[in-house]
Amino acid sequence: MSVQTLAAWLRCPNCFRELGAPDAAGRVLGCETGHRFDVNRRGYVTLLPPRSRVAGDSAAMLDERDALLSSGAYTPIRDALIEAVRPFEPRTVLDSGTGTGWYLHGLLDVLSGRARGLASDLSPAAVARAVRGRPDVDGLVADVHAPLPVRDEAADAVTVVFAPRNPPEFARVLRTGGVLAVVVPRPDHLAELRTVTDMLDVPAGKAESVEDSLTEWFGPASARHVSHELPLTVGLAHQLQGMGPSAHHMAARVEASTPPLPSSVTVSVDVLAFTRR
Image (cartoon, rainbow, N blue to C red):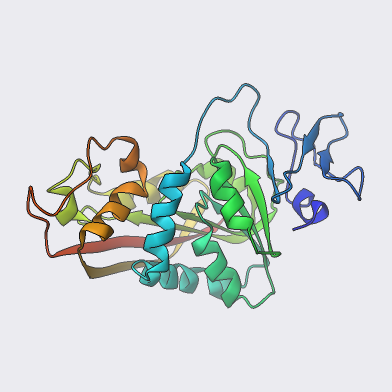
């Protein structure tokens, strides 16, 4: 990451003018209007809307996610995401709701140095992890529910894995013909664990709901169902509980005794790809 490569993605969150690096030797981004934003020494910039009070995932949640992803439990999901995006040969990839950056890193590695990524998340701790040790990744702390501080048609691909979506903004930042790849859980995703915990349910028809929300701007490109079973240990159960949105609502973690822990758990997601009209 350099201040210049970061600026090439971005627009001002206040006036929406393009951001640049007024001082090539410094760590500041600025627009023609005079708004200025400091680039964190860890390699990212925070561009939240004025008076924003939202908060992202905690370091503890990210630790659980790191542990799960490094175990290989979700590697089939990442492989399917890569296969959905790779045919488009993107040079610029925006990963919205990047978390630790694990999915983005895998995609960029397959693209063999021909692409740059922008890791965007509401959590500064997440973005810091996503850019760490990755010169091909720029970092952005932003709120996906607000107008994105990303330039028009800045991305050849946008990826969204288990994260909120903003269809009109994704359409704006994608070039025509670019790909939007979305990973959403199915109702049977982690169903065995949900029976013994207070983890959030997945509503039926989630994939169809996503498709309906995108039809104004996107056309379908591909769809793949990824499903496999994992042996369920108490440690894995803690990781699955603690790494996602259910962590904000848990009353207590599951233990081995009461109720009895299922012997396995189902991973079941849809990997959906769409092209920008």
